[in-house]
Image 1 (spheres, rainbow, N blue to C red):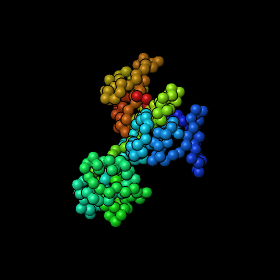
Image 2 (cartoon, rainbow, N blue to C red):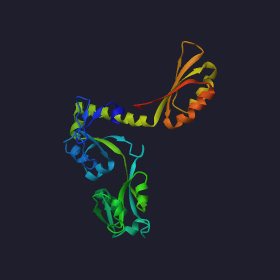
Image 3 (cartoon, helix red, strand yellow):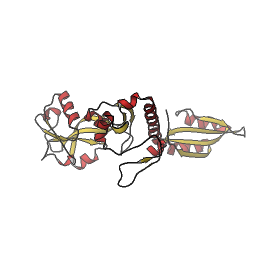
Length: 271
């Protein structure tokens, strides 16, 4: 993502200090669970973490930008309440007095309190899916697709929280014009890189006689760019569209009379 945003980042196999080709930026790798605390304390000017861990830490930081991406795709992740498939727990009320294991202890306790459920919430150091039913009655665990929960014969009762990656800044850095400008620039470029992930550019040559048909195929998209050729009977047409649509669009454009059709990837799309 940083590469598409325009930054060259290199790091050794055993290093926690990446090198970035920006003279006014230094970086270090910090666990997402700890990032908000260090940014909130002003030790770091900004950082990437999840909304879940920012909420869990209670750190006072500035949410600069939402960066909606995850390992499995461009979508939020979820913290869900899950129980074994054979469990008799079928509703939130059934959790009364039960033991719940999770890494997200604070958020889970607040969520249960809001729902009026009294249960015992315990911190889990990991491998949380294996704990029910012997070590816990239920778990609150992070999931993208639910495949890990299904593999461990767990079923979801409720969603506790949806989370996305956040670019956060310390209040001290945000109050400083020089640092704030650079953090805002970083946010713009990272957001642009994520926007570009699902898009592609398409350009083509179109004869005057086919322009009506070709533009009809593109009218549902953002207005295409049309430029005349040196030959007055030909035009260059360019458009940005959803990448997944291009596979169907190109054959239709060809049949409509377009030629020299080129699809190209995008690094950043600044909206």
